[in-house]
Image (spheres, rainbow, N blue to C red):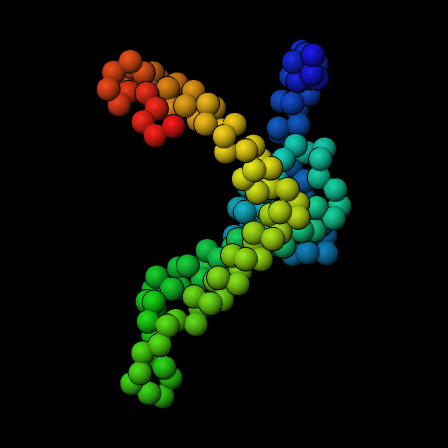
Length: 156
């Protein structure tokens, strides 16, 4: 039996779920960055984070916040903007900045193992889990997994 299968393991998992690391003192995160920090911290068990992981997680939180800010700015300014001093439209340079930031974010996610495969498992393994969750949601909202579209996998 694995540790989580025991009562002690289950209690430990609940205790760990309530713990969250603070960012390293020498990296200052804004209130906006902290939203991403908490999401990142909740993606792995508390005891699995190393000091190096926490540094990279802080960088990832900043990167995620930057992506969100750039996304909002691009929405407000548009995909095409006027080139300064001319009447010519050009692609918004913030799009390139966002692409670079997304690339950095992906790299950091892989370094600290918080990417989709590390946190959710392989796609083929997630299919059954996703189906079970979808069926449970349908039952909880009054649907039935036996009715058309009521939880039966359509594209699984």
